[in-house]
Length: 92
Image 1 (tube, rainbow, N blue to C red):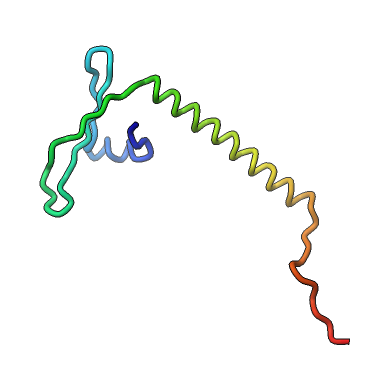
Image 2: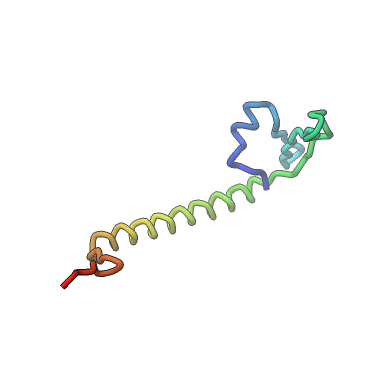
C-alpha cells in the first residue's frame, strides 16, 4: 500500500506517477541514492482500487472511534468534579 499521507506532495514534485496497465493500476516511485542523490531505478507497485476503498473504510471507522473518545472526554470534564491531587497542608 502506498503512503497516502504524502501522496499529494510527491505527486506535485513529480516523484510518483500512477498508470493504468490493462485492467489494473501501477504506481511508480522515483528513488534516489541518499548519499549521492543519484537517481536509482524507480520502484513500481501494483495498486488496487478495492484495497484503497478498504483502507478508506478502516480510516473512517477509526475517525468515528476517535470522535467517540473525544465526546467521552468532554462529557467527563462536564460531569465529573475536578478534585485536587492532594489536599493543601494547613499549619494548625
